[in-house]
Length: 350
Image 1: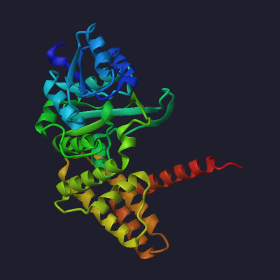
Image 2 (image 1 turned 30 degrees about the horizontal axis):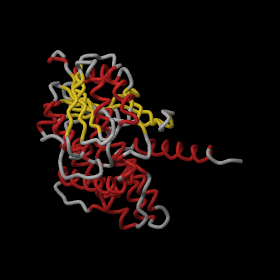
Image 3 (image 1 turned 135 degrees about the horizontal axis):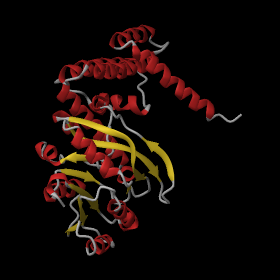
Image 4 (image 1 turned 45 degrees about the horizontal axis):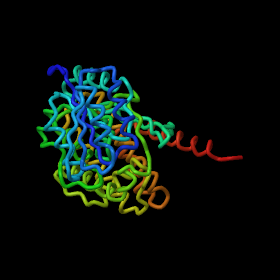
């Protein structure tokens, strides 16, 4: 592995024998061959270690590290970061499939865009039989990936590649976060020291199955996401944000909306405060600022629609605020509503 262009792929494993062969094979068949693969077994009781060691016997790029006792995902990831020799770190999951061009495309992007500290990509969601079920995409533009992080995670961890120096600068993966939310906590910290971005390409097959941490610890993960949003808002604005208000921000991205007019008003005020603080803190070009403004305005229009006839004065106030923030937001919001209604109509059986 040549030091200058090296990538360290970190693959945490815990009782992952069921899909581990596919995960390792997908990394070994990358078109970008200059990497090391660090398999970190976190105290597995199945055949995971044996599987990984079998591959290591035939491929010098693979290094297997076994932790006798289960320490958890955050400690395992941080151990991998300190073992890594590459300038770039690519994250992989024990049950996912990296598509062949993943490393090549992300390495090329990070070489060209030195201001970007982490890059993700789109992913196909597959089931236990590897059947593609849906597509998950994320904001491509760095300013949008950073802005929308205040409303939820904008990078899929197992298809993220980042600069090791940047991760060390923020102290590695933050500890004290439960439910597999350490990656979101890391992302918001990386966004404070550099640009974050996503490629539009589908570079991963993300396996959704009954053993996913996301499914097993969903409620805990959602609560931690609320906490991270609240912390991030306070970092940006200097104002303490209650957890329930942070939950409302995330709800704007997952169609879980407040119904109480007072909550709608508080949420709208927070969106406006975040927008002003964001554009004053980030060094944005005029075109970047317009994109963020359009998104902020669209969220105000969402809240205006919720206020509706029950509180017409609040609704009218928010419409005006949205137009002042971005006249283009009206068109963006109308298109979103149109797509939603079209989807509803297509789903109706006649």
